[in-house]
Length: 299
Image (cartoon, rainbow, N blue to C red; front, side):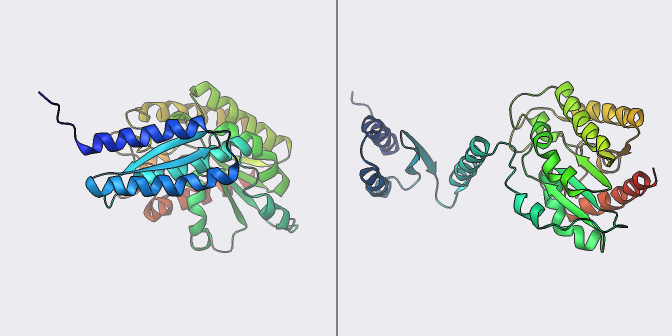
């Protein structure tokens, strides 16, 4: 009895064979390689006309590396994810700590005025996403945002001198650790995160910069890496941060207590994905940050 195999299977096989064929010709001239994607896409589009439920596209990742990316009509999430992964991989390989992001802005930034209470906020996407609200939430304040999406504490340690110390602030607000728990740059223990927070604190204090150590915001789950159960790790890390801040004379900024629900996740309405604050979330954070900064500047 003959087997009945869906056309979508043969479509996938055809694309896979193309990957193999192209890989064996990886030593071809670059000019020839540049013609491959157009022909491959044309063939896949032809295959797609018989199976409109799925689209396969062959993407060249590197001279010797190709990948099949699939999508369904009206759903480009895999293409978007693949594009973001590519950008992230390139950044990690060429500038792991992303020193280039603020290099020009730092160069153009004037030295602080004699009585200026300059404050630098360093962190990840939570800090970076806050920058758009600085003019309305901190009007007239010389606050500088140096957040970079996706970053972990070791990356911040690498860029701390360039993005914080060199700007000569009176205080720094450090909000970091959630991406370490998520494993964005590899597995990380709480002790590793603590070591990096301590390193940044010591660098700041050695340069006469007052330190505000922020609690990690509540998170019940990670949309980009589910089932990691971050909530108890966040609570444990925050307990260490609070104790360490008291020990070294830093100010502890507790966002977590004001934003957590009964599950130790983000309260409803304060985040669109359970991790990153909405404007409503930042409006809770702003007065807490102002109070902590004022306390640090009095010390």
